[in-house]
Image (cartoon, rainbow, N blue to C red; front, side):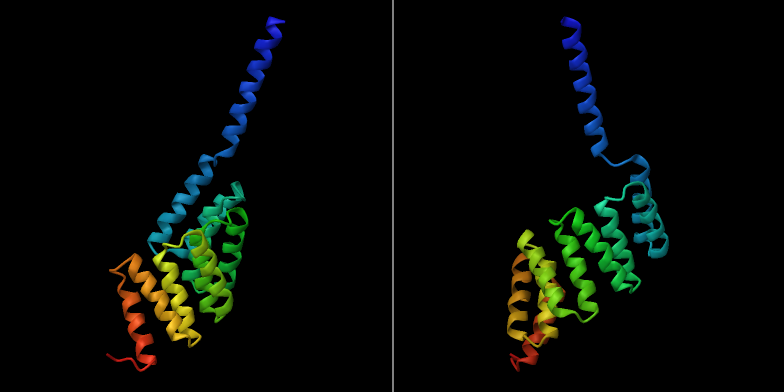
Length: 182
């Protein structure tokens, strides 16, 4: 009986080890991902995409790789492809506020303002203190001619980050559209 308990305990310990080890990313996928980040930072977006694709071949559910591939595509003006990547990242991690924001940016660039607003609202539900999400939501409302609502968003962004110069500049533009020059 004693041998059975120690053997079963060993088997259980090994199973737990392999389950935990299997939850992490492979080293090779991480290396490709990191190369992709380096290329992205250098502005080599096509090369970055190639690296993210290599990481995704190894780890198809690598949410950060999908998100960053989407960002590289966004910089290349490939908005539809970027949205597909953000959608994939969000399938894996629906609580990724940054992915919701980036998807909103791509939709905004396509003129899909209502869908972009939905993305920013989802990001703000996850992180109500995200100044960039408030700013981007303000921009969409500005595009829709909803200047008062846009100003409220810019004000919220400025409450969170008083040094957010773009939020102040865009607020001034919205005030100008309302004839509030003072």
